[in-house]
Length: 322
Image (cartoon, rainbow, N blue to C red; front, side, top):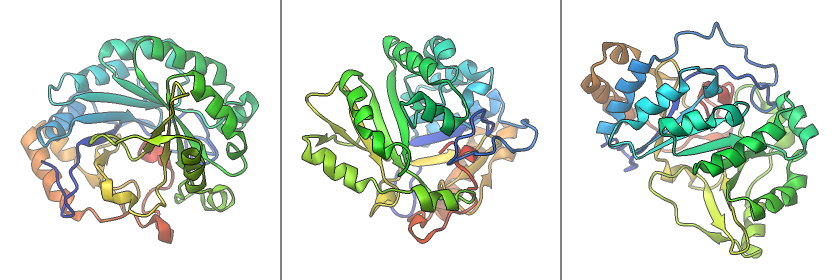
């Protein structure tokens, strides 16, 4: 079992398969992808070795992330390879949704259980301004298609003072009719976005108080769930989630580890640096990877230190898939 010195058990792996993204969201990649030549990412065999090691150590959920994971043409093969592990009970995908309408049937057929899509505004003009692409309508059609295929769908919206804070009612109206979980995520400071963070950060606590006052009820958190506090309402088809990394004791329930597209283990989204697993992965020796993971987990800290402005080696969220 992967357990740290603070008694936290890690049953959830966030696995990036590329750091390339075709969007230029102003809180993440405002100038677009600026990385090196997009190569050297984990192969299908290395993904299999990695997931085997995590599964043997108690991991039950794998989320495939990017960058934008659908930019890899072998995404269905990766989903299928992760899904084949009998100890992995849930395979999820986080995407910007630009290929959702065209590709979601292939992902579902490969074994995908759930999908998260980033939509920071339901206003087409604002969506275009944030992402640099006029894709909102086709993403919404893709969500309808994913729901029809039986996938669990979550939509992520980053809380920003001058963007979606004013349009919360529109989001709530949507959730009243559509059975998704809409998750509002507090804007997090990274190495490249301090000016934006200072101008746009808003706490999720006032929204939480508003939801509770309007009859929303907290939902008990599952052991492999992400960090969101989720709420339901008898009059709504969907649910609301809040991810508030600046809240007290946020890290106490941490249950996830991250591996980058080039095989670096990050013990925290805001760790000082990545810890390479590539040598062990190339060898294909699952037991060696297990031993390395157990040894490295001893360096995990109790908290991320975001509250004191520490952002570690994370220049932008596309590096690690959030």
